[in-house]
Length: 169
Image 1: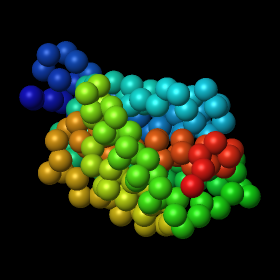
Image 2 (image 1 turned 90 degrees about the vertical axis):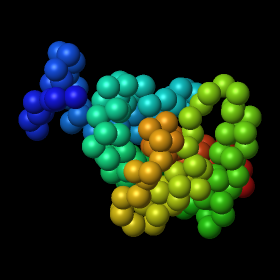
Image 3 (image 1 turned 135 degrees about the vertical axis):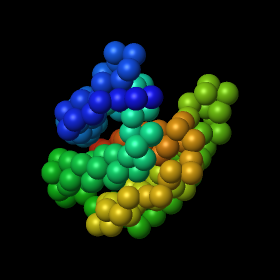
Image 4 (image 1 turned 120 degrees about the horizontal axis):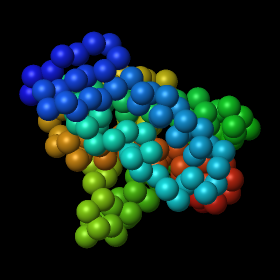
């Protein structure tokens, strides 16, 4: 897949171009929407932050783990900004794991790639407590890696719902 790359874009032999840097501002915008717009919680999707070729680029360059940390770090910061008086209790992340496990089971036939819940929620839990070490997820399929990234937005959505009293533990 010969490509000519620079810091701003990746041009492929077939003429396709991706601009990977744009994903960071898209993540920041999506996180702000989730923290401030209750309706956004119903439309969590990676298509809100990147198109397929951009996600494929990050998968091929082993960057989905770093994106997951960035998304969760941005989410944790936004949560603190918008809900400064809300502290997530110690059982928050175990409850999120259980909730997402049930959701994954219920949507298995729909083809929603959520990835391993333990890994995705684990990334968020570590980041929310200050550990920004990127996870080693390169052995996972592209769908599972994207699922781990998707879970960062789901964790924020549940934290926001908890702060608003809509997700009880």
